[in-house]
Length: 433
Image (tube, rainbow, N blue to C red; front, side, top):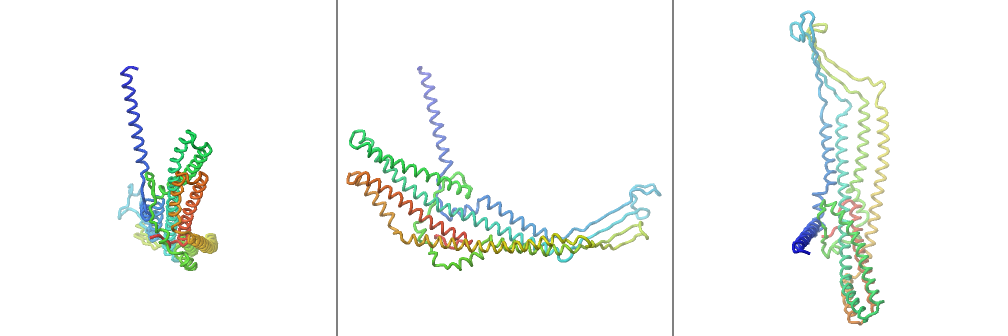
């Protein structure tokens, strides 16, 4: 190879390295690690979640409809003038001496309190829009808090796996060298490596679950450029009061007040009742009042008239709409009863689950995890000193893995049960400080 070709090849390699470094930097910047507390996550969620912000516009739309319902009908003005006067051979003759024109004004007046009933209907519709907004807020907030705790405990489990994998990777490398030198058997080397591969496979499955949770968090917080690491104090679980200190009936009563979906069903019933009254009022015809002036086209010049008009309700008395509105009232009464039962059932079920997880956690020694981790280190040290066998080591690693996972799952289960109970009640009654 010539010196020129060598310089070109060196330049290409340098350029390739620069591109790879640039891409690595961009990839790292695309997913910045961000530690975030639950309070900060909720604040960011309220400020940036597009679905929530879009739903809020429905409230503004419904409130604007109240303004529209309060407006009166516009008066109607009519003007009529002469196009051609054959006696005078004059177009558009509307002069006072020889011309002809008419002026009339009319006003539609709603009877039977129809305008007030329309205002009441619009106000109830605005209340329903608010109920729908706060129910969406309740649902999305529950999803956020639930995912936050799941992510936190899943990352804890992955951390335990990473520590085991790091320790086993060193031992695997050592055993590989020893096996090549004939100091350990191939069976022991393969068994240690299979344990390492098993841990890596489990960790990969956890990583996939974590990726799904992170995707939901990013969507809820409207931030696709951060990898969220939930930050939670160690007293998060102990700081929450015991569920059993609160009676089930008080939680059900609180749900009656705070559940926006129940209030939505109740307001829907009120809406249909008001619509029934409105349909009955529509059966009464509107009244039209007006006045007219005719220059010289009537029985006298400069004639003035008072106009009164009303439909005669011989055929259409709004019978079909009234009947349909009455059926809607009966239907929504049943739906309110159904929704009330749903609320009661959800609170009772969530309360039972929360109490059960509380009881289970009471049987777990808080120092168990620290003791287990100390024992794991001691077992590893004794294995390296050949005081215990490989079989004892692998059995203990399997036991450690299962117990740490179960402990994290149990702690997560309690937080999930608490959040489910908060969701069922419709208010955050139980929260870590």
